[in-house]
Amino acid sequence: MPSDSPALASVPGFTFSAIKCGIRYPDRLDLALIYSQTPCVACGTFTANRLAAAPVRLCRERIDRPIHAILINSTNANACTGDTGYENAITLASAVSRRLSISDDSVLMASTGIIGVQLPVDTIERGIPKLIDGLSTGQGPLIKQAIMTTDTFPKEAGAYFTHDGRRYAVAGVAKGAGMIAPNMATMLAFVITDAPIARKDLDPIFRRCIDTTFNAITIDGDMSTNDTALILAPDTGQPLTDETALESFEAALLHTTRTLAEMIVRDGEGATRLVTVTVRGAKTDDDARTAARAIAESLLVKTALFGRDPNWGRIACAAGYSGAAFDERTLSISIESVQLLTDGVPLSFDKTALLEIMSRREYEIHVNLGLGSGRFSFMTTDLSYDYVKINAEYST
Image (cartoon, rainbow, N blue to C red; front, side, top):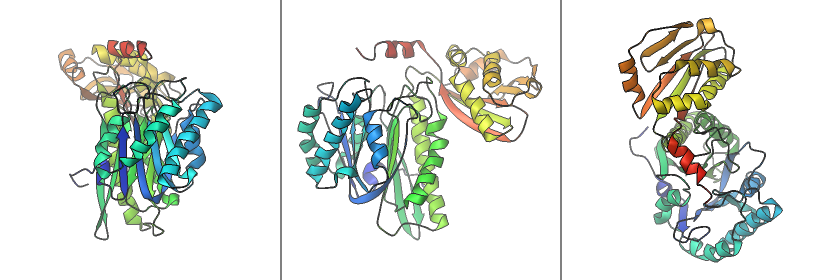
């Protein structure tokens, strides 16, 4: 993978815009647009929450159609807003399509923010002409800022790949710092590429990349109503079909989604630690995922991470109740290089060395179930006092 990393604005064929519309706050970027004059193949993954926001419903209905634009707002989730909320999403997407002279159903929408409040449709409609008039490649850096909620820093990543002497770009932005749990993680993510990829190839590639990145992180175990990850690729009528090209594209996309996923966990609300939990030796990969997720989402484990408490019993307990095939006699646990348990037998360990490891900003926990070759990793955070403070005051 090349060392240079493209930003959204580096992807040919796309323009961008973001404005301060006043959706909830008077002086904050809160309305954004990604636009391609060329119709695009779109693929997406969405929240598994049965209380899905209005823009999620709109995207699910349109995702198989040619897409030109994604309208995004922050500070208001347009979730739990009933038929009125859905009609508002349709109204705003239509306002964009009319102004751009494109088909009504070629605009997707995503929202993030507070639940249960209707969008100020009139305010947003008044801002759409300014939003569209501002479309340019130069506005690309503003997209990652406009989609933030409790994020402390904007998140953007990308990668290049080359095929038949031509260089293609893949780039994306994401937001998320709380309500992060599969499936999906609580977040918005938007990825674009100038590589023409047919839907039959793009959809499975995108889902594979999501599965081990955005669907393998957790901050607080809470699944949002608005989780959306979208990818747009130009529909030129001449898609890349060569297996090598598709493999190169997938590698670039995986690098992009993995980097964004790491950024989300690193920015976890109130988090002081980013910890990777890797489970090996499971009967199957699914069992490894199940056990890793249980450990990563355990509140007792997460508070121990915050307190730098080497309480490996909490890790063992979570693995045991996860539902994965389990045998205490074959269970081994280590934190980085410090072995705590081997084949069910507790070991003495250097507490000073372990305290030093657990004081780091990032480290790894390794669990071996000793039952097979299954393996999976989850990224998680600790649970701090600040997480409680942030979420106790969110809607005020």
